[in-house]
Image 1 (tube, one colour):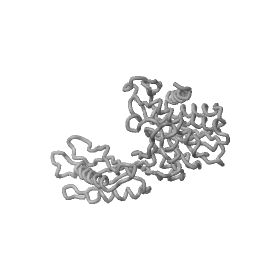
Image 2 (spheres, helix red, strand yellow):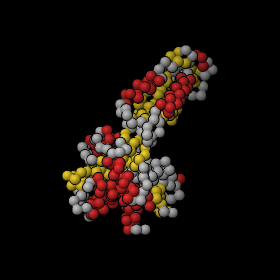
Image 3 (spheres, one colour):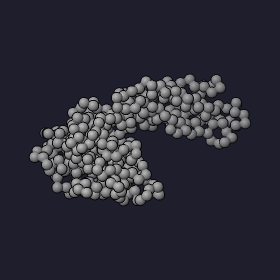
Image 4 (cartoon, helix red, strand yellow):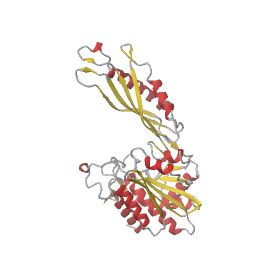
Length: 385
C-alpha cells in the first residue's frame, strides 16, 4: 500500500471510529476530531465550528487565496445506525478485507471526507499561489439537512461545490427531490357485526391507494429527465383501526413522491395531491381526507456542460477513472447549495448508494478511495487555476 493510500485509510479509520449515529445525532465526537486534525495540519487552515443544535457542531476550514476563486468540498459527518449483531465485525472498528475497507460510514461518507482533507493538503502544498478551498463538514444530512442549511444561512460563497456522496466515481449532475405526506382518511366507527352502520375508513383508504397507484403509472409515462428515472409516487406505510371488532374510524398512509428538477414550490405538489384525492366516497357517502406534508426536499441539477462538470470529468480521467455525467435518484444536501446559495454543485465519491451505503458490512474499495483523493486534487487545480 502506497503512503498516500495508507494515509487516507488511516484517516478514514479515525473518522469511522468516532461514532456519529443519526438518530440520535451524536456528531460531536467526530466534529471535535476533525477540528483537532485540521488545526494540527501543516497546512494553515482557518478552522471554525459552531453548534447547529445542542452538541451538534458544523466544522468549517478555509485555506488559500479567494482572489483565485473558491471551491467548497463538503459532506456530512452523521451516519445511519448500525446493529452490531448483524455485522461480521464491530461496525466502528475499521477493517481491511480483499482490497476493501469495512465499517459504518465508509461509503456514506467518511472516506470521502478523509479524501477531501488529504486532497486539499496536497493541492495547497503543490501550488505556489493556491485558490481558496473551503472544507464544510456538516451534521444531520440523514434527517433534515439542517447542517448544510446552517452553512448556507451563514453566507458560504464559492464558485463550485463537490459533495462526497457515494456515486461509484461517477459525476452526478442531477438529483431527485421528495415530497412526503401522511394521508389520513376519517370515517365513523361501529361494531364490525353491523359494518353498514359505520363508515369504514379503511375502505376509503383503499380508494386512496388505488388513485395513487394509477397516478404513479401516469407519472412514469409522462415525466422524463436526461439523467434521472421518471417521477414515482409510492405508498410506503399504512396504519388504521383500533380493534379487530371495530370498523375503523381512521386510516393513514405514508406517501413518498420522488420528483424531478424544475418545480421548487411545495405547494404545487400539495395542490396536485389534493386534486387527486378529491371526492372519494364510501357507500355513496363523502369522507374527510386530510394530509400533512412531512418532508419536502427540492430536486436539483447543474448543466452537464458546466465548467465544474467538465473539470471533474477531466480530473477523474487524469486519475484513471472513466467517469460519466449521471443522475442520483435520491435527495441530498446539494439542494440547499444550488437553490439557496446559488453554488453549482455535483456529487462525486467512492462506493455505491445502492450496494454500499446504509448496508450491513458497509465497505468501499481502497483503490477507489485513492482515486477519489487524486480526482479531488486534480479538480481543485483545474477549478482554481
